[in-house]
Structure formats: C-alpha cells, structure tokens
Amino acid sequence: MIIDQLHYISQAPAKGTHLTAIEEVLSSGGKWIQLRVKEQPEHVVLELAIEANHLCLKYGAKLIVNDYPEIVLSAGAYGVHLGLDDMPVPEARALLGKDKCIGGTANTFADICRRVEEEADYIGLGPFRFTTTKKNLSPVLGLGGYLQLMKQVSDAGIKTPIIAIGGIGLTDIKPILETGIYGIAVSGLLTQEGNSTENVNQLYREINLNSTQKTC
Image 1 (spheres, helix red, strand yellow):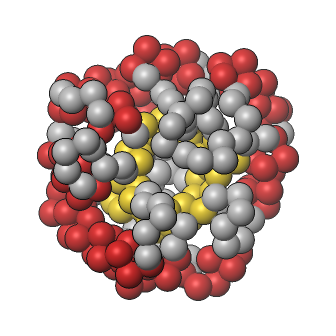
Image 2 (cartoon, helix red, strand yellow):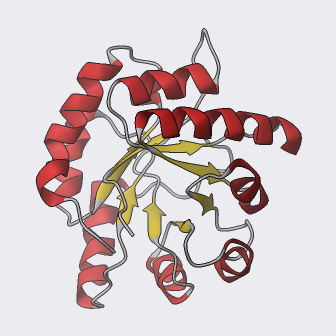
C-alpha cells in the first residue's frame, strides 16, 4: 500500500467550505486528503465525504475520512484515520477489510507500539507544536520529541510510515524530515495562507516525494 508523504487535513477557510479547500489543494497538486469534520451530524459528514471522494477521483488522489469507518464504505473512500479514543484499529479492520487504508494517531512511543501491534497502515504522530485546529490537544512534542521518538522507532526496527502533524510550517519541514520521519501532514498552511499551488509544490520539493515515495 502506497502512503503519500504529504497529507492535507481539511478545514473550512474563512470564505468557503471543506470542499472548496479540498479542491484548491487538489488542483494545486495534492494527492492525499483527509476529510476532518468535527461537531457535525454524521449525515452531513457523509454528504461531504461523497463529494470529497468524487473530487479526489477526479484529480487522481486518495481520500481518508477522519473518525468514521462506516462513512468510508458508504462514500467509497480510500480509508480512515482514527484517533486514540476512536474505534480500535482491529475493529475498523474487521469492518473495512484488508484493502482499505487505516491510519492511527500517536503521541508517545507506547502509542506508536500500540498502532504497530494493531497493524495500522500509517501513524500520525503529533502534535509538533500548538495548533488551534484540534481540541483536547495532546502534549506538544516539538523537534526534540520527534528526535527522541524516531530514535526509539529506529532502535525497535519499526517500519510503519510515521507522519508528523500539528502546526507545521514550511521552515519546519527539513528539520522534521531529518529526524527520520516518513512524511508531513498540514492543514492551516494550505488552507489559510493562500498560494496553495506554490506551497504544495514547495512541500513536495522539500520531501522529494517523487524520488523517495515508499511502499508499506
């Protein structure tokens, strides 16, 4: 299973919706979209997921739905991302089957080991720094936290792709990647700051996606 090294986590811009933000990133070259909609009824999330999946198929991208394995099936999405307090990965796997991608959140090395044991396809590790896009934020890791955790990951021989997430800016990409992290997830950087095409291109250049994309 191919896990892209650049993940966009959706949020609604000041003028627009999750769908307008997603299409902007897709038209700028983004290939991995996570639809993350909070505090909305499930039927609203389903409607958004169906439309977001149509957009992703149009642009040759993959859609991950945050929190809702059932919606993944109904919308035909590529997979689901589960937080630490969401449905357990094995339960989601039983529902979705082996062909759907399942990602899981982690904040500590114990969390990483749990996700590996659960056979998650990738791990979202964070937050890197404080971010307003998530309530009940786990302890901020910072660069030092990533260095320590990725050394533990390396020493343990863990191969599951790990994606850094949480308040990441363009200047953070290089030092984060130097910790051995597999990829980067961003939200506000592509939603709120404008110049999506330039930012997507620069992000892909920073992570050398075309030459280093890996199979897991």
